[in-house]
Amino acid sequence: MPDTKPWNSDLPLGRFLSLLTKSYFGALTKKLEHLGIEHYYSILITIESNKGENCCQQSLCDQLHFDKASMVKRIDYLAKEGLVKRNPNIKDRREHLITLTDKAKALMADLHKGINELNTEATRGLNPEQKEQFYKWLWLVYDNISSQPAHNVVYNLKKVK
Image (cartoon, rainbow, N blue to C red; front, top):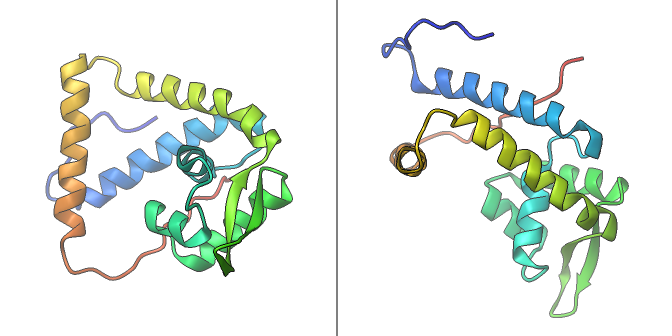
């Protein structure tokens, strides 16, 4: 259980966001563990939202801000689990289009339901206008930080047993 003391604004904002991220993905991984997809939710949702169009590894990297090497590993894992397949792109033989398998499509309703339930719980106590503002503020903070000069950082979440 997190400490209930007010946040110390002298500490880096990233420290608080890291705590929030670990807590959120820990709860989401637990909520969705019955699906057997580890923590690759964003990839599956992004593929689904692209409806198979222009959904190659590079476009997934661009949309999700992952580096190429880690995306290959993630796609390999999802393919091994029978959740995605790589199809040759007839317009460009150098790339493969990534599509959801029937197995993955069957999981998507439960995946969306679990995420929506956790998002609702996470924003409990906020009215609809406050929720909308909350997400706008998060994007504003992201835009402000991402416009700064920075080193590339890999953030690797792993389930601790």
